[in-house]
Amino acid sequence: MSSIPDLSGKIINISLRYHEVPMIKLILGLQFGDEGKGKITDFVSDEKSILVRYNGGTNAGHTVVTDRGKFKFHLLPAGSLRAKTVVLGNGMVIDPFALIEEIKGIIKENLRLDIRISSAASVVTDLHKNIDREQENLRGDMKIGTTSHGIGPTYEEKYSRNGIRISDLSSLETIIRKLRLIREIRQSELRNSPYLEDEKLLELAKNLHSTWDFIGKFVCRTETFLMDSVEKGEKMIFEGGHGSLLDIDFGTYPYVTSSNTISGSMHTGSGISLRKVNTIIGVVKSYTSRVGEGPFPTELHGNEAESLRTAGGEYGTTTGRPRRVGWLDIPLIRYASSLNDIDELAMTKLDVLGSRKTIKICTSYGKKINNPMNALLGAETAEPEYIEMDGWGTLGNDEIEKIVSKGYDSVPEKMKEYIETVERLVGKKISIVSIGQIRGSTILKK
Ligand code: GDP
Ligand code: IMO
Ligand code: MG
Image (cartoon, rainbow, N blue to C red; front, top):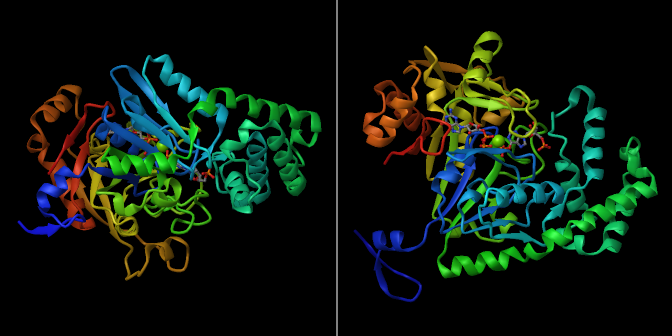
């Protein structure tokens, strides 16, 4: 055990320091989204946690199942059911109506919610949803398959510096001026929009302004609150929306979302440096899924796809679209794991995968490819090479309960083989194993 000086010059023991320093965790997905991040955030959260979302908007959809039922989160972090405080950071694009509905949904359950919303977060309006749909129509066969929730156009507005920020909701005049400016600039994209009529636009502005009555009291400079929380040594969990392969820079562009989704975006989206994070957990589903268009080298088709989709309930939390499904893709996970500089992995849906008689893992794309994105984006061709493993059968509820109570040692041997093969191929430890949808069906593996 070694000793190092801390900032005050005191000599402290490294292992003590690790445990005494409150854990700040960052949880994000390493695939195309829907890895089960929500379940993992909820699992690691408790009543002392401050939970932070820092990117995206209602295009994210996280399902958490507890003994009180099924909860779907789009804007609030998935651990909101039992957090001390939840924070929506400046990097988010927020539909205020959807937010109010989500908050009321939590309050209805008699759950307390202490929430802070960044005054600098961007506001998604109906105008932006109209533009999102129009852009998709215009793309024709180049369409992305967006959620049509106005995410891309709202980020465009942010970066053109004409965007409506959450703090603007307090002023009807500001909303009207900004909406008129946006309409003027984007006339052609709004040609099919009802908001070309001024009366409609004013109605939209008034509705947006009316949300301030509910939202206003929660709005602040969240970066200051978060900096103070870090200073005070609070337990914090940052939850990334979407998946790393949907990152606007490093994902399968143009089939990506409109924000950065890799670990670094936590800093720009919340104001808290990545250097403050103690552990980055990369969540991986034991197979792959993708919603919308874009390359997917290990995709399954026909009956095989249908059977896995049904077994995994792979239908979008946000749009209800059937998710495309396929085998685990190690080149992509290794790439995402490096991009995010993750410390450990959490693997979900092993109960679902186990019901396959034979399971495949893509270990490479055939030839030496220096960057898997080149293979996916056509510069080289991805020709997945697989290894095959045996399934471990369907796990009944009793068996899941038994495994959870006895711990990792009681996991079926073939599942262990799968987990440990993935660890070897990715070069990272899997520390959390999820074997069922409900909150309790999760085990720690050290
Ligand atoms: P996220 O966007 O990454 O939070 O994932 P979603 O919530 O959109 O999709 C994951 C789905 O799988 C949700 O319905 C979860 O409740 C469910 N899920 C998560 N982990 C497991 C698991 O280990 N087993 C099963 N059967 N379902 C799981
Ligand atoms: P979570 O947080 C799955 C996908 C959309 C579409 C593309 C662009 O639940 O993992 P957008 O509306 O963002 O402009 O759509 O990105 N997409 C997701 N797919 N899970 C998500 O989030 C996603 N967020 C965006 O389906 O293909
Ligand atoms: Mg999801």
